[in-house]
Amino acid sequence: MSLFTRKRSESVASLGETALITDIRRWLGSAAPESPHGMGDDCAQLPISFEQQLITVDPVVYGRHFDDEIAPRHVGAKLLKRNLSDIAAMGGQPTAAVIALTLDPLTKLAWLEAFYRGLAACARKYQVKIVGGDIAQAHNHFSASLTLLGRAITKRVLTRQGARIGDSLYVTGRLGGSLNSGHHYRFKPRLDEGAWLAQQHEVLAMMDLSDGLGKDLRSITPDDARAQLDQNALPLNKGCDVRAALSDGEDYELLFAVSGRTKHETFLSKWRQQFPRVTLSRIGELVSAHEVKDSSLNLECYFGYEHLR
Image (cartoon, rainbow, N blue to C red; front, side, top):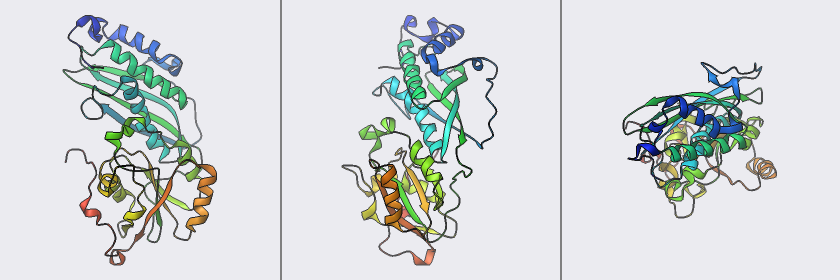
C-alpha cells in the first residue's frame, strides 16, 4: 500500500491533529490504557518498580527501514520489535512505550490505521502498554520513533561489557539475507531466550545483532582481545554466504559470550532443553591479538551497516 496520497480526503490532513489522536486511541484499543496511566496528559503515570529499569529507542523511517512493498501492519510491528530486541539483549521484560510520529499531511489514513493496528497487535502479544507520544508535521516524510521501557527480571543485567580472553562466542538462530527474505520485519525478538541467558552465570556479555555480526562483534570484544571466528560454524540462512552473515544486518538474533571454563556440550544441552526449536551455534572465541590463527576470518573485511558512513 502506498504511504502517501494526492487526495486530501484520504489523508491525515482531512482530520487534523486532534481528531487524528482520537482515531489513534481507537486503533490502539486495549494496547493503550486510559489517562493518567496512558494517553491524555502531558505525561503518563507509571507504577513504582523496585527492579532495575531499562530504556531504549529505535525508529522506522520510510525509505530506510521500509517501503511501499511492506504492509503497514508489519511496519508497525517492526517498530516495536526492534526495541523489544534491545530489551531481550539485556535479559529484560518490556513494560511501556511512547511513540513520536513525524509525517506529511498527505499520509494515507488507511495506511496509518493499519500501521497502528499492527503495532497494537504486537503490543498485546508482548504485553506492552502504549502510554503516549507526539505528532509532528514534515514535508514528504514519514518516521515513527518508539521509546520502550523495561525492567530487569533478574538481579543481573547483561551488557556488552564483561567478556574476556578465552570466552566462547555464541549466536542464536541463523544469519544473513534479512532484506530479501523479509526477516527484517518478520523476526521474533528473543525475549524468552534473553531472559533465560541472563540467569545463566556462565553467560558474561550479550547484545542483539542489528547492524551485522561483522560490526556488532566489535562492541562485545574487549580492547585487549580479538574475535577468532570459524567460518564453517556460522549458521547461514539458505542462499547466504559468509559475507551476508557478517554484513547484511537486521538479523535481530542474540550474540553472547560464555565463560571459557564452560563445556560446550553441557551448555548446548541445557539450551536445547529450554529452546529445542531455536538454533544455537558456537561461532568462535576471544583470544589475544598474537594468538589469532591464519585460518581465522579477517573481520577487517566485513563492516556491517553504519549510519552516516
